[in-house]
Image 1 (tube, rainbow, N blue to C red):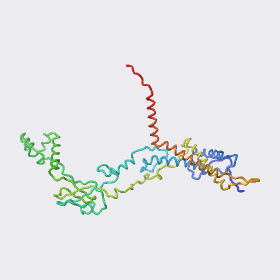
Image 2: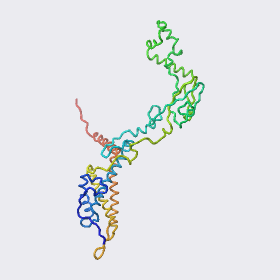
Image 3: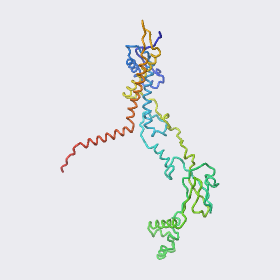
Image 4: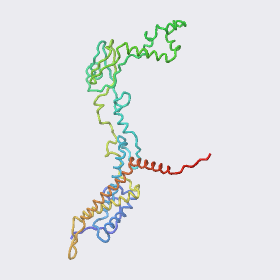
Length: 382
C-alpha cells in the first residue's frame, strides 16, 4: 500500500510557504493562512476522514484564491475605465486609485475630425509650403513644379491655399470708393483739400469706413474676375484670374502617410489591457465580504486538488476489502463551485459600473420625487 501523506492536524505558516510569495509579508495574510487551511480541511471532513493534503497545498490554494479575486476585480476596473485610461502613463500603480472619467479619449477621436477642418486643431502637424506663380501661367503641378515645396515628395493633402483677393482696406481710396467724389468736394469746401486724406478717419464715423470697404468688395465681385482656384487630385492647381505678375503663393499641407498613420506615439503610455498598471491586491485592504469570497474559492481549489490526489489512487485496500475514494464527486463539485463563484463576483462587479450606478441614482431620484408628491402641501395663511 502506498504511503499517502495526510493532513497532520494543524499548520504553521512561514514566509516562503506559497509558490509566489506575493502576500507572505502581509501580516493579515500570514494570520489567515493557518485559519483558512484549518477551515478547508474541516469542511472537507477532517477529522472524521483523512485529508490527503499538506499545509503547503492549502496555502497554495489560499494564495491562488487571492490572485483570482484580484484578477477579476482589476479586469473589471480595466474594462470599466479603459476609455479613460488609454494613452495615459503606465508609471503609477492604480490599485487604490479612483479613476475619474474624462473626455480625454473622446477628444482624441474628435481630433480626427478637427484635422480635416481648417483652424479646428488636429492630431498631426500641418506643414507650410510655397510655389512660384509666373505671370500668364494659370495651371501648376504642386508635386512636380521645381519651385514647389512638394516637388518630388509623396502624396499629400492640401489643407489651405492662400489665394485671396487683395484686402479692401489696401484700396480704401479706390476711385470707385470715394476719392475724387463728394467726400473730396466736401473736404475742399471745409478748406481741408491740401491736407492728408487721413482726415477722413477723423471726420467720419466708423460705420462709414465699413460701408466703403463693403462697396469695394461688392464692386470687385460684380465687375471683376473673382479670385478663386481649382485643385484637382490634391496636386493640379488652376488659378483665377490669370496671374498678371510673378509672386510666391503659399499653401498648407500634410503628407498622406502622416495623416493616415493609425499608429500614434504612445511611449510609456497605456496601449492595451496588458500594460494597465494594476498589480496584485493588498490583502490587508480587502474587506470581509471579499475575504469570504476568497475563503470559499480556496475551498473549491482545495477540493479540486484533493479530488486530483484521490483520483491517482482511486481505491485503497482495507482489512478484508478495499474502499473507493470519491475523487469524481470532488472534481465535479469543485468545477461547479469555482464557476459559480466567478459568476457571482462578476455579477456583483457589473452592478458597480458607472452605467448601473447612474441608473440607480436616476431611479432613486424618481422614486424620491414620487414620494414627495404624496406629502400634503401646507396651507399658508397670510
